[in-house]
Amino acid sequence: MPRVRKGAARHQAKRRLFKAVKGFRGARGTNLRLAKEAIVRSQVNATVHRKLKKRDFRQLWITRVSAACKQNGMRYSQFVFGLKLAQVGLNRKMLAEMAVNDMDSFVAVVDIAKAAVAKAQAA
Image 1 (cartoon, rainbow, N blue to C red):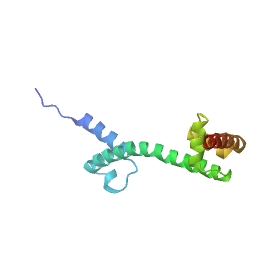
Image 2: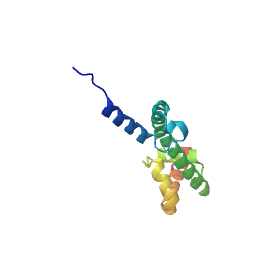
Image 3: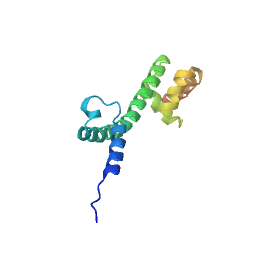
Image 4: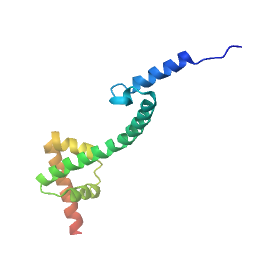
């Protein structure tokens, strides 16, 4: 029985691999061994950065809401505390969207939070 060689399968695997490293600079885009390492590393970084993306967006939303709160004479921490007391269920993404695009409704929410904080301090 003749020995089986892996010519077509190996060529296909290499093509798939080099397609994945297309655009990588230097030997990482041309050498097989370095290309394999680059793919593993890029997949690890992709996983890490998917998690970091969520963190970055939350930080951006908090910054936007904080700036809008300061314009309306309230600190961000007091604002969030007031929303909890008033049982307003808006998340930071929606609050940031309101702060950027619909300032009138955001001011109404700030007034609700202010009233809830004042009521808590009076009691």
